[in-house]
Image 1: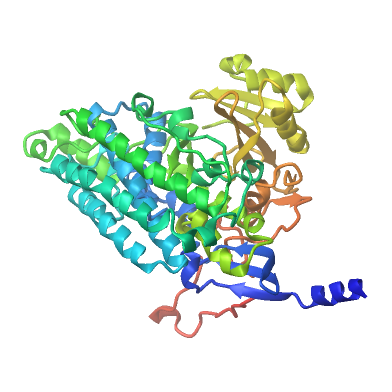
Image 2 (image 1 turned 135 degrees about the horizontal axis):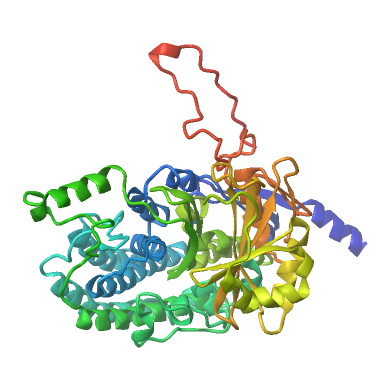
Length: 397
Length: 185
């Protein structure tokens, strides 16, 4: 009898489509859910709704043009995508980047990380009904967007880091803008924490929800804050430092429970650590050239074009054909706000990448959504999705 | 790169631990090995891909326990004879580096062994390669298209796939463009 009931209940499992048009799925993510009442029995993410063929487009662009594609994939961390691509191309070209550019890259990358985490925090809270949080975090994010705009002329699609250095020098008043933000921000993080960390409703909705163990994370390829929240301390900035991250003093926050709440705590701590790096970078920001002096890679200064024939030739070459990258292949990865972001470039000696593959952290992280959601309530699913912080632009590429 | 056949040994390859250790486990299956910019790359025969990944993972001095990435390459315009290549990146926390494992797939027999049974993370990556290059992975639990629509024809990342594949209405071909039914499965 009990068995019959069990079977009868099994038959009643409902298949529910969540998304692709659903406000809490962060872009266009579709989930096929099998529900037993309110319990999620199976959760299959269906992706591809934002597929735009970036990897095919890369093969049609020269290395100089391709920078503009990198920040359109993960639109919440444009600078870090620029950085990873630039580092890979610089490695293949064997180009030296001047110290001012290296420090500026670290500073702006960490600001990007804070901006990305602010969007995550706003949406994570919004998902659980805490709407005012979203307005607070976007207030601070706006300050970072203003800094980006003053540097590159763009708020989001910055394309500011180019192979060889930066696109242009840091603007006048940059230091003041950044230090104003860095002085304000610790109080603002404290404000967020006041609102959420001990908030009973927030804890009820997040503690013990969407759990992933460290073993599951490693098996499914989950990296970044979600892996560290499960008790596995791995950060590419520490393990394989790039841009001189080994010379900065910062910690890698780690928690042990692997639930939504711990992912929240890890990211809150990461914002504070990023702040520390920003201060150190700002204090050591040297003067000097902002891009390489190698005229085969970087454009000559505008002033030289009127007087130097050679500068004009280099400018013409770069603007028409672009630079040629010697044959070879390289896998560069950096720590993005979502985890291991990798650019694998195969160069064939021409001015276009032969193949450029992006290892998108969200792509791998989303694979673990099924195991994290199964067995939980369907109402908690939105909290779990938000805590993995997927960006569908880079997932679908 | 004007290589005619599969990659050959480079002098630095003889010294890299990942390469020397894998040679101990699977000497017969290794076709080529090289080290470029400090990153080892080992080419194995297609049938040895699963044993090779397991050997890299289980070797006590290597421990490449995390699958980082899988991607495909179409060598059509590079003149390398087996046309397709599948490239795996594994990371070792012990050695703190990545190793690149490559398998070449011939155009006439586009079937590779799936590694999902040992590496759950490979699931979507293999689906993406199937979608983009048309390489089939035998033993994959759910080998369907992942990024393109289910009824899509062709594999976009192949080098002979046109960039502007879809015919668009213009005054020169008005009324001649065939519309396809799009399913919402």
